[in-house]
Amino acid sequence: MTGRSALTTHGGEAAVAFERVAAIPAPDLGHDAVAEFAEQLALDVASMDDVQRGAFFAAVGDQAFAVVQRIYVHDFVPRVERVLDDVFGASDWAGPPLVEPFETVAAQPPQEPPVETPADTWALLEEFMVVVARLRSLDPRTTELVRLRGARLHDCAVCKSRRSQDAIDAGATGDEFAAVDAWDSSDLPASAKAALALTDAMVLGAAVPADVREHLTDAQVVEVVLDVMRNAANKIAVSLGADAATVTEGVELFTTDADGNLEVVGTAGSNLG
Image (tube, rainbow, N blue to C red; front, side, top):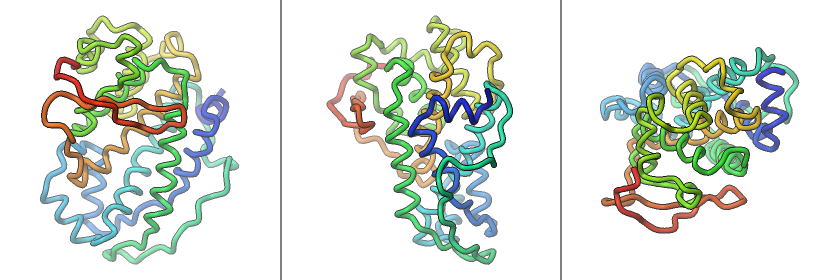
């Protein structure tokens, strides 16, 4: 088995959506401010400052949202491929596609804002995020731990202010949620630790544990990796300074329905980690 064959076997419609996203054209990094912004987003989006944002906005104008979507894609697609290959074996990711390639736009000269197709790009990302949310190999508690770990690593205010009602209904507690900050020394179950190790491999570039397949099924490994990329779309909002929480006290509760759609269902106190 290889990383790509594992994705195809266990990802289902999410594997197809991933390949559509992976075919989105790369952003034009010919402008120094755009290149610096992209590097900061990839290395540590939580440390993005207003000077970098201002220079980026000046360089790309009203194309900011579209450009940052492409930066996110070309930041995270290689992470997915690397981690899946580390777990399952090296792949030919340039092999025959599962889907027709995404139509590209003409290359733009350096120092000019690139021409983008924001509606098409965002539609592909939304499709990817929804179909990944339909995967159900992981239990709701582990899914929420993975989401919350990424939220804290990326310092996304709105993501950190939310908790999954599905996980709470499955028995998750505030102590369990708080454990993601030091998961490796926590008393979380081995399967949760393996999922969080994969999360750190995706986000921080940490090594993939050799024993990850002893604690997670192959389908669960694929789901964690795709979940991390899905959740990391918060980098778009964080990088643009558009990640403000919608609650000022406590946390917002949400559920994810069978179709992969998120629904806010209420609020709770700050005792939920």
